[in-house]
Amino acid sequence: MGITRRGDLFGAISILNGKSRYRFKAEQECLCYLMPKALFQQLCSHYPDFSDFFRQSLTHKARLLTEKRADGGVTMAGFMLAKVSECMREPLLMAASSDIASAVKQLNDSHADSLLVETQGTLGMVTKTDLLNALVLEDSPVTAPLDKIAHFNLVTVAPDQYLFEVLVLMTRHKVTRVVVMERNDLKGVVELTDVLSYFSSRSYVVSLQVEQASSLEALSAASQRTPELVKALMAQGVKLRFAMDLLAALNGRIMSKAWEFTIGERYREQSCMMVMGSEGRGEQILKTDQDNGLILADETQWPDIASHMQTPY
Image (cartoon, rainbow, N blue to C red; front, top):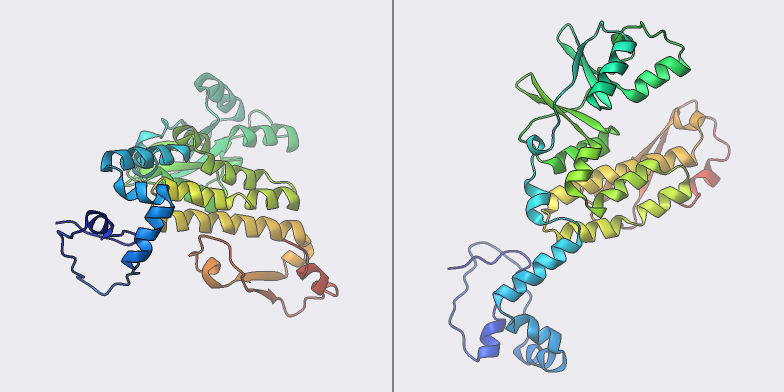
């Protein structure tokens, strides 16, 4: 007994062999598209590739599918089954009262880019960039305590979560590091570079291009690669709901950055763009004509709003 699911087809072998040995039964309401026997035979006659698809052995089909998925950058198993615990690094923890000089030495000795601090049971993170900004831009002394420059609003994940989910969270929260926790116990840290190195897939280059875009033109170029991302995800056999999560987060970043590039800060603070339809619901896979809304504060004075709203995306 076999189970036929969405996107599968059946009956072709029976037509080619001239007889049917199987019965097909619908266990629930379903929609099937029927192809007349004569049309099927005509297609097989005129298009050898079409005919070969049905005549090839299962082994050959499996090999072709593996090659196609490999073209996407990673195999389905590596893409879908990799867990946080396989990629996380050991956490570097210091007391929040430690000074900047000690943190710099610790990072250099450990060849790390970030460390965690703890104060009153709360974890915070300090990166090399934080230390550099504190010393150069804020003129902080090297004796300044780390809790003055640490970030305490951290994104956390569990060791048994999928790395795919971690990438979605990083994209959604605009962070490059997440902290791994298990029942309030610190287990490790995962950085974006860890995830990218693990997967080594061109799919994630799109996310990086979006984040690094410094102009509307660069952002548009990155946005135009999302169909390539969809193709890669589908080739890798990624489940639709995972693809939707990643694309929704990515589209959210694209829309947010496009809004920043297009609209001045003064008006951004007095307005809110509302995305509707499938994109607003986080269900969009491919771009469609989309209606969006604009909510303005009551006191907003925006004389040239019409021209701003017609700026090409």
